[in-house]
Length: 92
Image (cartoon, rainbow, N blue to C red; front, side):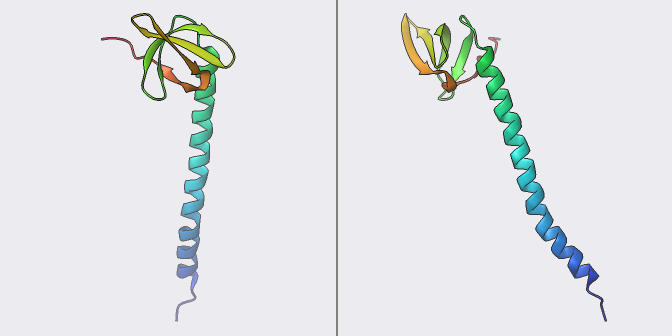
C-alpha cells in the first residue's frame, strides 16, 4: 500500500503554482509602475513622445497634470500627463 506522500506532494505543487504565478504578476506590475512613474517625472519640454493611444507629438508645455503636444502643422493638443506612454523611438 502507498503511504500517500506522493499524492500530497502533487497537491502541494498544484496549489503552489498559482501562488507563484500571482507573486510573479504582482512583482511585474510593481516594476512596470516604477518605470512609468520614472518616465512621468523625467518628461521635459521638447521631447518627442507617444501617448498611450499611439499619438506621436512633441511636448511644448508641461505642468503637474497636463502635457501639451504639438502633433504637426501647428496643431497643439492637451493631454493628461499620465497619457504619455513612452518616449518616441529614434528615427532610423
